[in-house]
Image 1 (tube, rainbow, N blue to C red):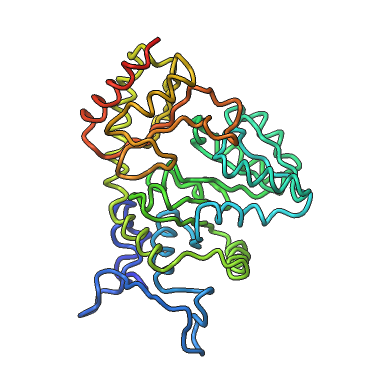
Image 2: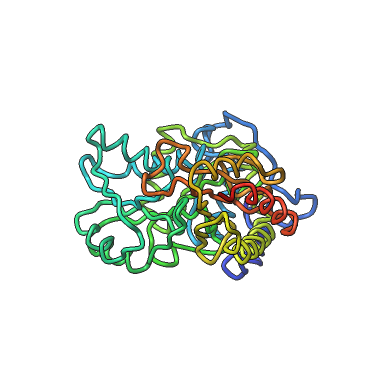
Length: 362
């Protein structure tokens, strides 16, 4: 589905792109929204051919997200499908550099590949730019999260990318936390941007979908071929849900970020909290409870408005003690609770959180 040629996405600001990109052309009686194409089979002779290769609803979503990230986009069945597709680009025995505080699913995927001799993984402190640059020397892929999940550390993307490229490595950035409204890594020189579109892009905790964006046509073709062969494709309805969610992305991110920043202003004064981690942008905040794991677990069960859940980026506020997962890095504090700040009234969020924290003081 083509955008109106009179208003190219490149001439628009991100919040406008989120609303307008991937829509049908402005012609009489055209639907304002792209239809859901429920088809596994197409009449032969065209560009679609078969449901594992293409779908017009995917295309609309990919046009919109690609325009936001400043590249071309491929959608996948889940965020992990996108992650593992990128990792599969690495040759046998080659080295992957990644943050030690990455999403646990990514760490588990790397560990699985390493256990089978497929790759060599080197986990680094992403805030130590000099050490990361040194690790790039013999790498095939440098995987970045910025901010990291759940430590919320920020990487020097441009410096690391330059070092990786000098060493002949590709660079991929998981942009799930920041979204393309707050950070566009392709514009900083990286090769690949990965999203769990399940999170902020969809925004309503009702769909699983992943995406990869790139400006490299060669990489795009390789990734498209991998998706065709491996079949890690999204459903048409899921793609439509994510695209619908993206129409309000800028409004949701602005409100979640404003709420998060207000909570960050208040949280350090509470006696139950030993540390507040916030990168300065976005809607994710991590707090470390002074009384450790027991207090952190207690907090997640005492809130009434905040929901104890493992996902993030929805309109509702959620929280979770990350070390309850065995795959979480041992350097993450036992008492760390990740807060995904939603779009509710911030006073209601604070009152609920403060009351729960009051019960976690030693």
